[in-house]
Image (tube, rainbow, N blue to C red):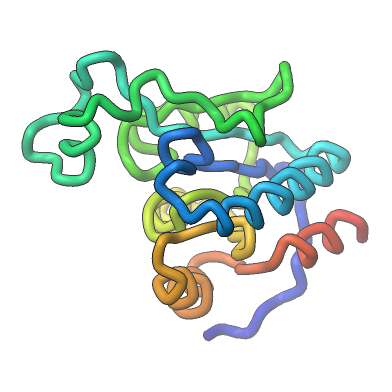
Length: 193
């Protein structure tokens, strides 16, 4: 794992809270979710206080799922079960009145969404990533954001995966190649500095 540089939060930073929505939260262990929500709420409060843009990302489809083809194994089940239609952010982490909710149609926060347009409009060049699941939206967004030349920070204890070992491998061995991986407390300390 590469050496970790001190975390510096630049002015052009956005906090992304990804796939924290009712249908996805319902698929996770209740105890894990109960631990995640207060950390996300605290991180969001500190980001807002520091003037950092908070963006929520949800995977959501139109009624009938016209965006999902039969060849898509990941989303075909959601289509057959009628899930992920008109999804919104989980009420425990509901956006403020002026905060942006991005609706995506695939795993990465960039795929099938207007996230890139919003980031460019606000001259954002540093993304702080959180969400469910580490092996889904977080991994896909890290990869795409790196290819788009964003500076990336992953807040490991504000991400959740159904498999703790997969979460550990991603946050300890995979993400550090393209992102700085920190805890919520470390991020809060950087905001206070």
